[in-house]
Length: 327
Length: 274
Image (cartoon, rainbow over all chains, first blue to last red; front, side):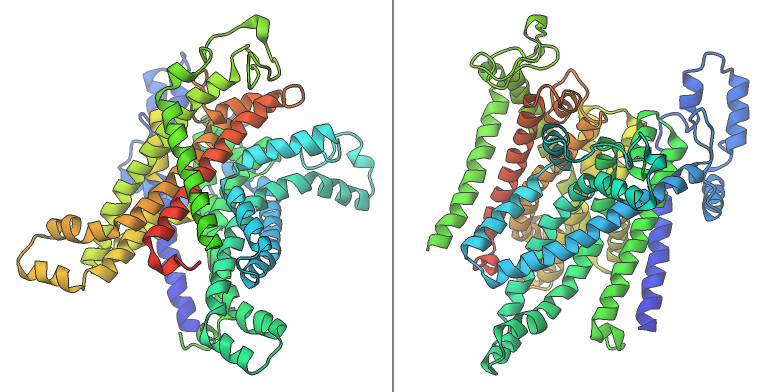
């Protein structure tokens, strides 16, 4: 396990380094410079001021020195200041928005896991049945469903037509302060139902389909035949023998789905007006707020990287071949 | 037997919708009942009727005509973006699989790194610098979606490069590019085709999401995504503005996915029984 973990951590560092290089490359991809949006639209901007600003941002230095500086800043969470009028440090802006995005993503991952796995297993066990066909069709529709359209439809039905659920923000605007703690939680939960559902929907289709095909494969193997031949009840064969083997790859798939899930935050957070990292990214792109865009990109990718590592560790803990160091 | 028919009917349905879309997109000017850009202030926000089958929008433009022209945008973006991603994926995957060693490690690591970026964030970051336009969207989607193809081609090459026909070619002194493109690649065409078909669907999804966010195809050019932006603003008074464009995206992506699956099943005997 230790050897495996060391190797994995080394890879992680390499990947992290790659992420910073690509991000830095994108920053310098800009025709003009990172400061030009500030300068270009400001008639009072003289060439001297531009030079001073260039020096201030270190843009007059060679590229590798700039990269090194940027990396050093990154190490102390110094991602520069926003171009927005408030000029606040980028990390502060991201930090206050991270919890809500993480909460929604973790909730939807949990939902994906606990709904998709039973669904996939049930389909696989009844392969070819009516139930299996209906879920297969639903999965295909789920795959093709644009998340933002699903969000609109749900808003139309639950928010406007039946007026059951709030459709924007994370808590009520009126009278929220006067609610008791319990009522506040309830208020939050009501606001989170639609966003979490939308965020989980796409991954649900992917994982249940994957689960189904893995289960079908496992159920064909010899040890299952043996287990059945021994006269074990079907329930034990499926849930103990087959499911355990099929669950392992599912953990990896769930880990791999993190980038997509986090990327989805941009879409549903801007639709449901949720003040998370995704909405910040969208607003920053609309306003060409480059330091915030880059800060977001780096932070979100690093989080994804950590999420993948977590999934890998779960996998290793679940797989005796790795856990016992024979992998 | 029943299962076979069921399987194939889904694939056929996908194929028919894709063909229909291509026809609609190509013949848009002849099929569209109205000019998709024609503003008509007297017919603003009309619900679906015989004159306007999908209703009219905030500026009185015919929604059906805009949907038909939107098919052009979606297919263009989908196909060209996938073309770019296949080109990059095939070249990098082939290099990694054929040469192995350091080349393989470098390319594999690049794939891992690219997969760590949530692609929407990466696309948005690049778009922010490049200005949103149809061409930029195609390029950026292509540049951020080649990893799957690269992995697939790499795996195919790894399994094919030790086979006798390749070794024979090598012994005969054939050059690396000749072996790669002329002898090995044709064997990997089917999985690439499958991945391309599925890729068109997901590229269309990404384009529509970007356009919906106001960062993709810009109005007045109609795209299904930016039509939905308007649909969101009028959600309470005009359901048809948010229902029809979304349905168009859903059906199109569904059709490409079904077609891709069908091709996979027809060309890959290992998966036939599923």
